Amino acid sequence: MRWGNLSAPPDEAGSERAAPAAPPLPLALPGAVTRTFDTPGFAGMTFHEVRAKSIINRVPGASRVPFEWTINPYRGCSHACVYCYARNTHTYLDLDAGADFDRQVIVKVNAGELVRRELAAPRWRGAPVAMGTNVDCYQRAEGKYQLMPQIIAALRDFANPFSILTKGTLLLRDLPLLRRAAEVTRVGLAYSVGFLDEALWRAVEPGTPSPRRRLAAVRALTDAGFSVGVLMAPTLPGLSDDDASIDATVSAIAAAGAASVTPLALHLRPGAREWYARWLGREHPHLVPRYRELYRAGAYAPQAYQRELAARVRIAARRHRLIRPEAGDDRRPVAKPVAPPAEQLTLL
Figure 1 (cartoon, rainbow, N blue to C red):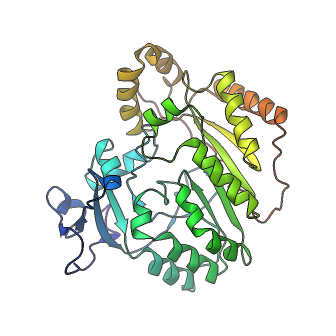
Figure 2 (tube, rainbow, N blue to C red):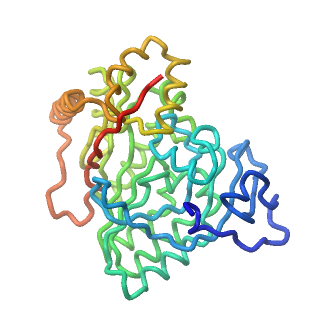
């Protein structure tokens, strides 16, 4: 089954607000321990703790992305980005791609020990591992569960190269570990900052640190000796793709000391497409016709739009003297993602 690599952890007597999972979850996560926390940051959220059977996952061969292996200690994400392309993965667990994705988070509590075990397996050949490619491994839950220090320590101990893409400033907590890992292997760090506008940030990325706080984290990592890339992602048609927004964002990225900027136009896969369309129709109905036109052929904006966006960002990057790192840099940011072929879909 699609959730066959998950199982429940043993219940812990006296654990904070722990209770057996209630329907409909037994179908997807039989016997999972459900936990809530009496703190404002976790209001309305439920965490389902499971013991995964595997943690280093091979990317499907059809995926045109520049990495083959991933680690995802969480499923679902409190960042609640209305456009998040990973939303549809929640439906594999009989949860919905909308509110459930934002509020029902699956936590693989044994992630650290699993990573160490799988890295030690004779069949493992030390391939680079990407993190933050599905949901953010530094989302709010990480402050409570602290899975990433265990994962990074295991990767460091096996000198296994890895990369992290995040919107979470909690990454700075693990800076000492990251520096030690970078002494023995390649460590790629990248942040996602699509725009600076605070009203837009609060509307479409309500659970994330602000763009300015993310850029402050880029500066801290740069000052610590890392070459940090920024994905200017996503750029939202009609909302953050004007020249003023692009210039201000690239200027701030350059001022933060980023080694590179890579623009990515919004893409709308199933699950994310419906959730974003509902939000757009409610908050910006005048943009609905434009989106229908841009995304009529599938999940991705037309190549002409993407090329124009890339050209405008490139011009801004030159203006603000943002230069890419040299090839061969052992701590260069994650490579630019490549979009898979578009699917035929409908919007609104």
